[in-house]
Image (tube, rainbow, N blue to C red):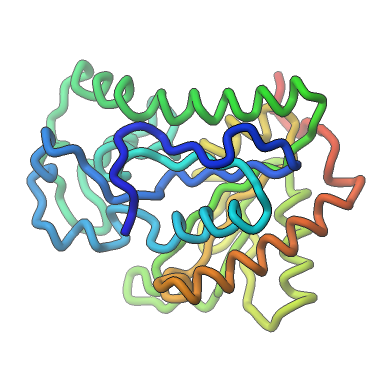
Length: 260
């Protein structure tokens, strides 16, 4: 069951082992004051409310590697931490065809209140974790853990997982190669979504610092129970361990507009 904290959850906060995990869609939690955003309870068990399995995979990788992580505090339906401050779906009026009554006609003050309560604390926690690593002369691999629906718009998605990137392909393409070497999984390169479209958390906390970074997307039917989540966590932990040995990855490098 997703956590129900209303502040970001920090795991292994003081660890410095070369990997930082960020899970911005970890939970389906909406504080009671928001009255379930006017939605029926069943919507909070669905993918529109959170990334199913992502929190479990994140926590298990942290246990296996001793890595630090930050988990988002509230449902993406309340405010989406993987959106820029001015993005039109920062507070989504609808998601996958479901209208969200409490998100209609919000005033700027109401949106700011949600940002101050949930969005800024999450990103401030991520900022602090990255800053502490950089100040310690470390170049961490920064990985966002997400999951995606097996079908979208009545089309089955063939990928088991995907790695997203925007301007810096280093870590994504290294991990794609390792997954293909070690498994028979079908892996997407900027699929089923593109990091060139939705990449706010990784851009801000990874690419803008010149750090190797990627968003991992795992198909939700592959991480919807504890055993499956454990298997994925073990695979990703092993591959990240290998990435830590690669000199071409563990160095800061700025691409495009990052760092400007």
